Image: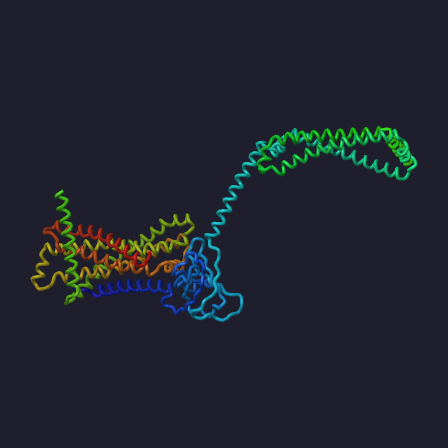
Length: 329
Length: 257
């Protein structure tokens, strides 16, 4: 078998292509690992390197400038990281640069980031040690997030229970929200209260007038009061009546107080308030009491108007008002 | 029971024979004179002639591998990892083993049939009579030729497969040539390419040795030639996977995969 020239050419081509491809691949891979570049070494100390490995990239302002050359434990809490840095970059890194460990994407490889310092400083040299700063790792963040989401889950489930109870009409708030009769009652009692307060303010105004008239005309009313023993007795009677009604009001207030206390100091918390239906009943009766109380108060006021002592005064007032009305006309 | 024992004996005898054959090959390789012209001739007929086959296989495998893995990686949103994933799997495993299997089919059967027919037609005996060392001229040149050309074929196959993968990425994901190969070489390390290359030398050695052995000790008759070619391919394929396993095992120890 004689070899032809074209055979030799083809074989030569095949061998050369194969060899070139191999050498190119080796060179390209070697270049990435900085085997054919001039490098210098800098170091940094860390407490936790978050899974950094030999050969991981080192970045300065986002550019790959070298690789991690070695990781050694110095003592139980300090790890020394040596980094091979491209010699061309040396003039740009200052001595106050700070090394941090970050990750390349959320699940990517760990990398060392070198961040320029803030001040003006000298250019770094071979074998220098730069400062480091440990960030919170993703793990830690995820751990904290985990506990907070757990708490949130517990909270929302509780809230769900409460809102369910409310919509179903269980407990005080539920009854308050859903019971229309009670709402009407409340409305009525509020109107009554309003009326009562109007009446009260009017009476107070009139009382003021009486007091002022007593002050100014002391020979008429005050004199009468001082001299007349019968009316004095009757006045005493009225005062005792007032006292009795005030005691009644006080007991109502006590009831309200106890309700409020129950609301505040319920040992068990919110649930107790939400689930206690007797409280609703007592609240209802309290409101009824208040209603009755205000009615009685109105009656008292009416009685006061008809009393002979003050009757004269009221008539006088009426006359004055009539006169004023006539004068105006 | 006796039959199984007989078969086991036959198998062990064959292994022992192959070992003798291998040691004889190494002995003869370093003996003068070298049949250099014949070696080049064999390199041409094995290397160059297999090139097209290897290139097409590699190209299609690169293409298909990328197309098939793409949807899965899309699900994770990790399409940008495509070049590194494909390059590592091709360079480490698929390139060498696939090229070796294709060559076992083409070269192994060829050697088995060629030497077998020489044995059957008594050309080997004629060579011995005429004073040429048939082992040296036929076996050593062929085995050396496969051993030397297979790594080259593997490298070219890898390159073509990566190019096929790049085409898919370029069409489907608009990845530029520079970016693709930048990512490929970013993810590759010496620990990937060196063991694969060393491994493919052993693949070549296995293909050549088994092919030559089966042919050299071919049984008489035309049926013997066919059987030699057939068993050469089957035995080589099996041996390739065993060697691959050992190679990965050893690589794991040295390179910390």
